[in-house]
Length: 549
Image 1: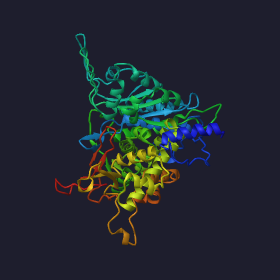
Image 2: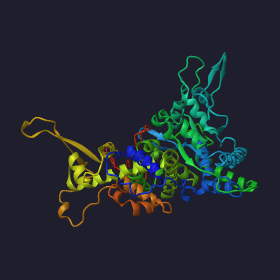
Image 3: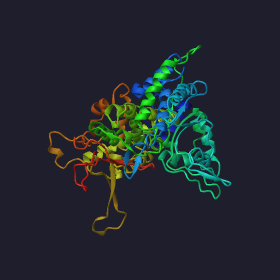
Image 4: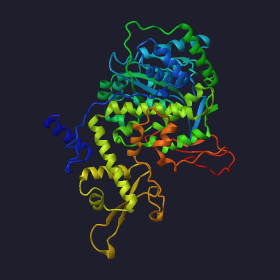
């Protein structure tokens, strides 16, 4: 790297990471900005979804993970609102929004959906009531979206009857169109899609010809190039909860075949028959029956989910920008796990379903970082994470420290004000906070500003007798620990990751007992605030609750 190029890079990195004025830690380090594209775990290709993906990618240039994503979006829409999981005061359903990101002509985005359409047509021939409505013409407005699954309306003197089946799969081959529409003044499509993901009724506030859609069940599979996505995804979409409702995944063709072959008809029919059985099990042929199949966790799956929720699903190591795009990792994991359980024709979510769902969440995380985060951003976030981890360790050992003591005692003066402040902000605003600020007045009424001390929150504090203890309790894992664990998990299952790489979270998890086989109540805020989860025991008194986590 040339000197002038290095100076420019170092200045950018220092500014992003808050290193201005600090002693340089990059003088002897060559930072390579090249990165591998996301490499999804084969665990994503679970069960029926995986079989469809392998069938569609055999002898074609379609990426199997892109086919699997399209299948997940299709199934999420097709199963309807019958299967549900209680989430606080609401029910959570299995609908998903996915966006295939890949370069033009290399992504093979259209090819990845061909088999899904063939399966849908075959299932429709078996039983037309099983399949959802599929819209492939693009979206424009809230009113247009509601019109496809409307509750009925009056056109002149004529009454247009309601569409009873509210299941809809939107195939948006130009996801950039949705982003363009959301930029127009007065356009409410973005808000309508947020409502659709939540399952909230779509009710445009118009004076004439009101077209409403109650209890919509909409899934989306979209396509976009990375340049379009980055250029059109503005701050508003990144911060208002629109973007983090979509699973963005990077996938491109992994084969070069001059003469790709179609999937044999008998294979399509076999897969369609399996899909039809799943949809019948889920009650898809009775779309007006809502919330009739309660999905539950097995005890082992509940314990695993609780550990993931307290750990990896709350990882903030990539920085505020990326974390905001991934704030819905927990509810998305639940929806994916529900779908994988349904493909096994069971209402009980098992560990295997959590593993498969978590593989997709990790694929999503890796893709978002690859698409939206530059190598310099990545290095800056890592620097902040490292600083935060050192602060937590220092405060855990010493109990409390002033800002000056942190600068001198923890970093020997080799940390900039900006970097220290950024790390402290991350720790204070974490959910839950890792540290807190205590303000102490001057002794004996002396004039001057009160002193401020930083100390670990109760869950991070060292036990009072730990100095004499032969075995000290390990401090809770930081975002750095989680990030390190994720770097070595590609060939391991979630169980292996939990056991080998995240032992710090073991003391957080409470195993679900045999009397409490199902997670019955999980408070999920559909805003950007992560949710908390609980289990209710049917064998306890009405006022008693047992927390899973």
